[in-house]
Length: 138
Image (spheres, rainbow, N blue to C red):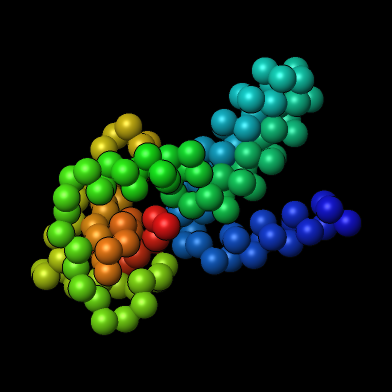
């Protein structure tokens, strides 16, 4: 029962994210999970850890779950101005190109090139090259 619930939640999370976000989170999660599993339980642990890490990495989005609070603090420390958006701040929303200031994500967060961040309605968000919100950092 627990495995079926985990599988259903993972699948639902995968459908909610853009494909590029899924791919990056999956690969990073799989690598980190395999490494931790192998260290804890040898080769079999590496296989299991990789599978679990891939699932949680995908659900976690582009920024890893551990990086989110640190990134949120990083953005707040910068004192970046918030863009006032009249609609909901959610994944898939396309922001204007010219009236929003976009910033590069520091390399320490291991976010693939092409993603930048901005603040919308006081919420940090990651956007892709088309200015589409791909992750809301809550």
